[in-house]
Amino acid sequence: MASDPVATAASHNPLLTKLVAAVGAANLGDTLNSQKAITVFAPYDPAFDALGADKFAALAKDPATLAPILQYHVLPTRMDADGLITAGSEKTLQGTTLKITGDKTSVEELHDLLKEPGMMEWNLEPQGTMKFAAHLYKTGTLKTQPKAWTDYYLPVAHDLKGN
Image (cartoon, rainbow, N blue to C red; front, side, top):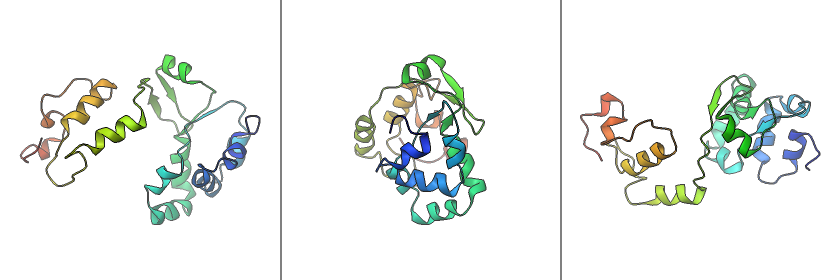
């Protein structure tokens, strides 16, 4: 698998079946396979499952919309994790520049954070956001640590109750 071109290699991974289907629907298989040195941030099947079957099917029928989404996940150069962190930012095939922070927060830690009481309660009033905001500050997503949820929410929400 390591010597296969990227789209072919992905087709051998049972966790990337939806990515492979999306690459095929967007007609990007040959494009990706012909690249000599690229970095792919490969979303695995649960990421696509989060879209829902109807949204995924709609995107699969719309290559003009799907292709740039997939190209956003590809860098036109081959880089390892240390190289990405050292670079700090890289331009994707889609044209967007990604900021790379080097945050080493594990998926498990993020899941634990989101499982805390109040973190996944969704209503019109923001709830339990300060711990998540602290994480966003720690990883460099927010430039300053907010003192209140209103510091990083849109002003239109400031009159709502929340925490």
